[in-house]
Image (tube, rainbow, N blue to C red; front, side, top):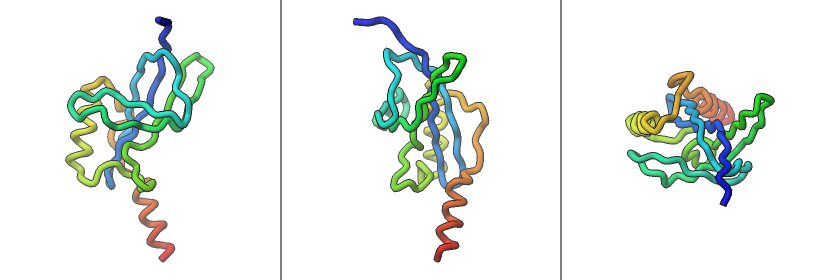
Length: 123
């Protein structure tokens, strides 16, 4: 069995209807996941039962491999993960406890807001 491991910078997004956060973490794996595959991240507090789809794999010139996952629990491409703000806060804090970083902080969920406006404009 090979003991070679590759350090990969993963991106994970969480969103409520009003707020969103981009989290990142360096995780060492024996292989680089491919777009279309799924991954589960450790989360002792909330559980690790979410399998997130890999949406993008980028090989940077400096050797870093970046892997993006889809928005957590993005049912029907609705652009948010959580109905309740408290649930967003709980998941956000639990991922920080697992070593994820949120370099840009929590921001407004403009994707949901713009989707809502577009849907209203088409009526």
